[in-house]
Image (cartoon, rainbow, N blue to C red; front, side, top):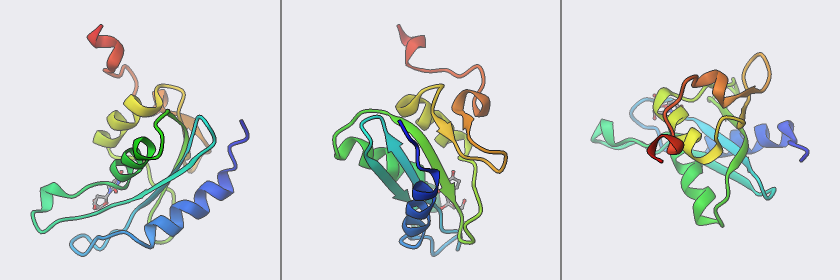
Length: 128
Ligand code: THU
């Protein structure tokens, strides 16, 4: 499937503009492509109880399932200046569950498979 990285980046930027980040002042937007071609987005949503804040990728994974399920094949994450962000450690684990090792994550060096960002990962297969 054609990924369309520029379209994903535009969608991530638009989602970033809707982030709720009054505590960190660090809005994040994420956009992903599902395996059926759906475009999925998310933004970070913070909370007065700081530790309860949700990363952009959390919202994105929720939208993936809320709009029909499937799994992710490509992801772009951006900050307020449109710079490429790499998912935090917790989100790498979250993405592993919903995209797997071959999920392509955009980086400053181009798209990388999630397995490069989370080597030797623990995942669903380990529970078998
Ligand atoms: N953040 C994300 O949304 N995704 C990440 O992968 C890294 C961090 C958010 C969490 C918090 O709202 C803000 O960025 C500053 O850490």
